[in-house]
Every structure is written in C-alpha cells, then in structure tokens.
Amino acid sequence: CRQTTRCGRCAVLYNAALLIRPFSPADSVAVNGVALAAFAQYEGVYTDWEMLVRGVGSMASLADTGEIFVAERSDVVVGAVAYIAPGAVPRAEFFESEWPIIRMLVVDPSARGNGIGRKLTEKCLDLADRDGAEVISLHTSPAMEVALSLYLKIGFKLERRVPDRFGVPYGVYLLRLR
Image 1: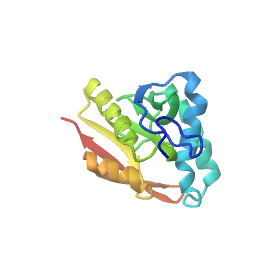
Image 2: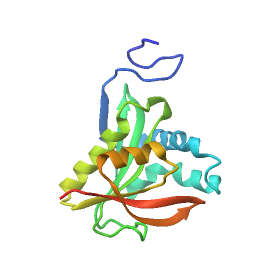
Image 3: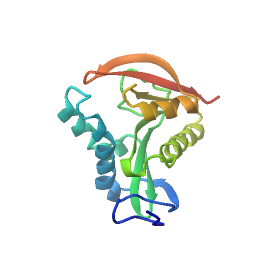
Image 4: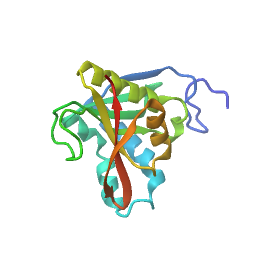
C-alpha cells in the first residue's frame, strides 16, 4: 500500500505529519476508543477484564486531575497520554506526592511503530521539566513489553514493585531528570 494519508483498505496512517496537542472534551470518545483498542491485546491476561476495561475506557476522565495530550495524524487521534503534575490528587499511594506521573500512554495498534509513544512520553518529560520536577514516575507491567522496552530505553529504572493489578505484576519506574 502506498497511500500518503489514510488507506481505506487497511486503515493505516502513512507519512502524515504527527501533531501532539492538548486534549479537548471533544476528543473524549476518540481517546477512550484508542485506549480500549490499545489494551485489547491484553484480554485474557488480566483476571478481571470487565473491571479493567471500565477504567481503561474512561481514560478521558483523567483530564479531571491532569493534562491529557493527544497524538493526531490527518485529523485522527492515534494516541494519548495523561500527565499528572506533582502534588495533584487523587493519586495511587505508591506515587510520592512530589513525583509527576505518566498515566495511560496509549497508541492505536494501527499506528504503532512510528515513534508516537516516544513523542507522547517526551511531551510528559517536557511538562515535568516545566514543573521543576527532579524525577518523573509511571507504573507499568512486564506484560506490556513494548511500553516497558520504550521506558527502559529512555532511562526509566524500576523503583519498586507494587501490588498486582487484576493478577498482573506491576512496578513503579522513575526517570531522574536533574
């Protein structure tokens, strides 16, 4: 396929400029849809899939406590991430209050492999720098091999294990910024 934007046959986006921009409420359905599509590969991995999907499918609600940024290509939302600033609440007890948090980095499966996850992560690093943070945190699982690989390449290090989530092991990872 040699399309230059969206291919009607395979629904893949090609060679269109990627725009990282702030979320708006009009993006809610698209962001929640991308989150569900991104997590679909883990069905059967988590013990309570229905409960997990309820949380994942409401990713846009993270705008209530943080900043969401979307990745858009040819007017189509292909990824999103939430940034939770230092001191923002509520937050899971395993995150220190002074740590900014990267939450719910998601990329549509049809758009993966184009550096979108890295660009969204870099946006969060810029925000942490803006906020004067010494570190930035996230939690993820070895089950999320591609995401974990990206975070480790960027320089995140395992800080500590946290309780399993629906039967899946998780850890808190930190990147020192200063």
